[in-house]
Length: 277
Image (tube, rainbow, N blue to C red; front, side, top):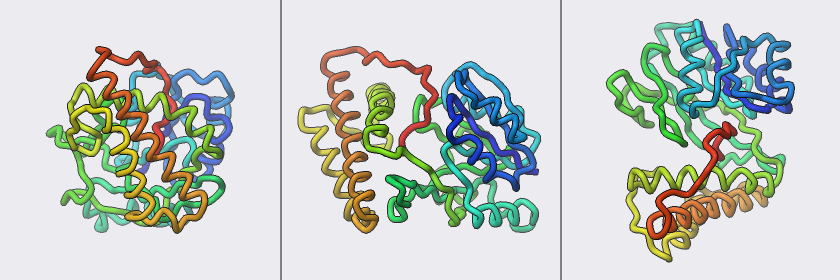
């Protein structure tokens, strides 16, 4: 049995399409943290089981959804994402063929749709499908991860994890201005986490300096534009690469300010909008 879990807040514009793409799931569970639009009403109309849960962090919201799930397998999806027909077939075959379940965890290929174009060269691999008994989400304030029962974080390439290649489509921000509007909240979360742990989310450690924001901007731009071949995704790919590089700049600038001046940058952790990817 497969349970699909969505965490929401004010996702009325996208929730119906998301749930429609999950017709292969045995149940769809929506965990809402205080929508003021019609998200919950629309989700119920689409046949989802809807629960309210005060915002407690990304990982906690997902773990709450997992506790409500009846399935042995859990699929976590964001409200602005849709499962492709090919991924639908792949997951259905996997769940219905126990002998094929050689892994406890599966990484999905996330392809972002930006400025109405799929960024096929800038895809991400996210762990979204796993056995309910095999793990849970940690309590990281941003970029939460799946951990096994022994609290070991599951990494891409681990012996217990596999990859599914048909795409999960992420319908991202339609304009660069909508990206920037949400970006500042998440760069603040990232900066606080980097200041607290002493590590960038990549695992690297950086000494705060006035040049660090520029270094990370250029590093990210070159990585995405050339190493990841983002330029092959046209203008949309170029804009995405620049915005992603600016994310690193803004985050590291706040990290430097934290390290030199302020004990903590104030932020509002109650916003449940999904991180930029």
